Length: 314
Image (cartoon, rainbow, N blue to C red):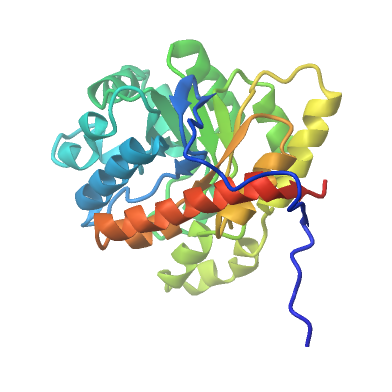
């Protein structure tokens, strides 16, 4: 039986040499990076959060990457877990580091007229800005989930008027359809992160820990979503035909299993893009820094080879 061929690429062995250890600096999120991999938000409430975040921040410093922290909800009213998230001194001042809150926390703080808590959170963490994760299916299927009472786009518009630091918006594993993407692209966001269907799906995870038979009836909803490839195509179509686009960067995540997936989608993207990973990095960061470093070194070398010899079939 013939081996499967990856039809996404043309292989062009005549047109480059093996990559050299040249400077690969590029600007993204307003800062200089060396590797186009984003540490997607995770470890909001795990027991190993401190160790994981420190390993990830150390890797970012070594490889010139950016990092989104897991949910910082617990830090809004308490400093008990602050040290688990306080990694600016490890990642350094020159690389992107973003705090993270859910749309439900944002909505609640808006209702209480307490946006100052968000400013304090970002300031204390010395973060460059804030990620807001939008997760209606996840919250609905969670036994103790919060309820979203206002359209998320309205809460985001309010936040953007109230703060002067950059905002990134992401989903949590099901991605977003074209009209949601269009609405976000019309906002002056720093970036959109896909968190597409195909990676860790938090709606599915909540179903597994929910014994409520009524909630289980909603299981088909956890199977709905959009892939990173679909979302890249939609963003390209929107950008090509819409002069109202204000958001100028994207982080492609969700189902990115290796450097070839990331390279393919970054090359396809009209907007400047990097790709994000969560579970692959988490697996190594939980164990040891050496394992995480070896994994990232292989990804970096794979990206360099791809850039030298592969052309995307757009």
